[in-house]
Amino acid sequence: MTTRVSIVEDNDDFREALFHILQGTEGFRCIGQYESVEEAIKTLPKADVVLMDIGLPGKSGIEGARLVKQKYPDTQVIMLTVFDDDKNIFDAIVAGANGYILKKTPPAKLLLAIEEAAAGGMPMTPMVARQVVEMFKRHIPVQKEDHSLTSRERQILSLLVEGMGYNMVAEKLFISLDTVRNHIRHIYEKLHVHSKSQAVAKALRQSIV
Picture: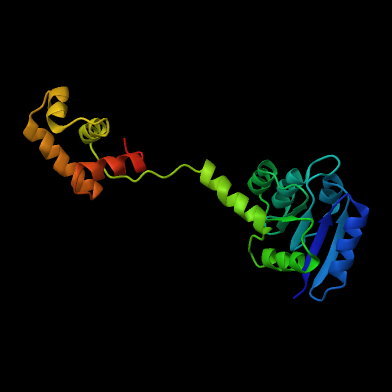
């Protein structure tokens, strides 16, 4: 099968180089070359992959990725750019980009990235892939486990986290020591722990209280 590729790039020399790489490689065909998003979106034929620069005159390539995905949801958009900062990477992914490759990538690896995208993958320059992982670590909140603790059990666990002992908890909540122990036993069962220190550690690690 031939992979049909369109190019949106305002640098004439770079765009021509991409065109000749594609046309000169078996299994690839360039079906469109455009200098801007505005020009491309008017006449863009349905391609398997669109190579999209970010720093374009008029609309940015990130907006271009969004518009291409709206017009052709099945078309894979690879950002091909010099920008390797978190904001552009994040915004491109949010806009629907299926890959993010830096322009310094060797032609052979670029062709592999195009094949990977056409096959449903998400190719990225290794450095960019590492940045994406780090961004998600920073911005995606840790999911809290649902341990089905009652409001009273959470209250008692919170007091344990503060360093209170069983007697202090009983005095603070105006309940008997036996009642505290009963609640503690249920807390241990639900958290799958066997001691106060384990319960406190799990509460802190998983932001249970």
